[in-house]
Length: 566
Picture 1 (cartoon, helix red, strand yellow):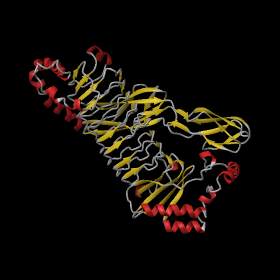
Picture 2 (picture 1 turned 45 degrees about the vertical axis):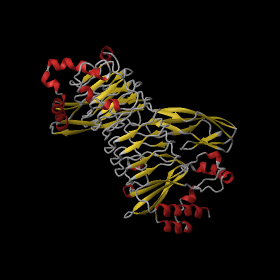
Picture 3 (picture 1 turned 180 degrees about the horizontal axis):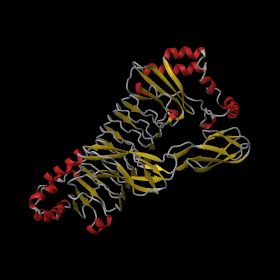
Picture 4 (picture 1 turned 180 degrees about the vertical axis):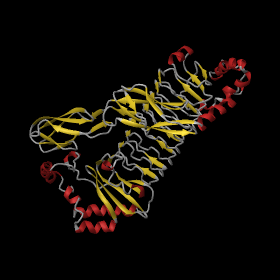
């Protein structure tokens, strides 16, 4: 009877959404019994001994919970009747307490439904770790996410043929490359409950035109919107402290308002944003990473506050005719040692706007006013005095800066090399390598790679960079006279536990929630199995009174989780 009720709900859900193509919806999930173990998570990947231990717990605490053997019984006659009605193409597990069901067919497209409560499993690109529906994902046109799903796993919906996404309010985490290369995706609604968006989560979603990042986001992963070439606008919330490496690299952004809370702009954050014309870096930003605005060819004006104390190499490489308004003195600028294009114009002691980016959208009045009466009335005319000496030295070329921009821009776009890196941050263990890809623009010859610090990172003749120890290394890519530099940061892996201890009663369970950077396999070991056992998924069960330590390990890093059993 229990199975009938479950399948009946699935049937009604499939009928309700079968006519809605190309969308992702938040769906009502099948409710678990409220009295189940104080809402603790359980796992299916347990040993035979653990299953025996859990049996009594299920009987006492949640008689309606569907046990693994029942869920996997595909030959049950009652189950088969409902499966035929629903046209179920495939089903299985995608989380400790989550299941997936695929309905429909290849011709009309599939609907993928995620049901249950808790986190999805994390997946990867290689076959052994791929999503169960990898063979059908290019024909998945609808996704229904249950309203008790709390985390979307790594690579969960990559390459699916969906056009819009509605993520339920229960979701707090969007995993790495969760929507990678969903080329038809045009609309995403991210709820306020989301606190983390993983690295490259929406990479190469080329049809995505706008995105609003809600308040409450703690971490916005590097490359999250990289190569979203159709993305023209983005809303970033106050509270965000870092624009990580490659965040908006190679997007179609025309403007962006950087929140006042941001203190760091990472490497390649806006690299090759060809439509970006002006940028205001707010007071409070202290660090600008290497190549942050590299090859933003139409970037005409930028405002840099005096709070910036650390800059990388090539921040504005390939930005011709740039006008820079700096909030500090010339002496402070010289100490900053920022590389700028030879034809850049710098104004010192400039007023740093605190509102919208409109002040930077009016650099034209600064170029036009050759009137000397108003240089002291407003901060902007102070640009004129710095330009006037140049006009008198070389009247013909400098009086018409526009023509000089055009000839210098063309060689950059028409001839040269473009080098990009898959991940600019790698780790000493786990994700310890990355690959540099080089595109030749009307250039011939062999590509040569060199590392500035082989003790930190080495690079092969094919552009494969491998981590050695924590630090920074600059990889130089060279073909003939053309060179490009890419900064690689090597970090030590980290492991964080949501809590460091817990108290449970005999026969009860608690789940250890661990976050690893980079993502990797997590193992658990109990110091005393007679007091408490732990499964491969981090579920601890109390056996008898006492205290036990669970050793949690990932990527060579270990943490202790103490459990007291009453």
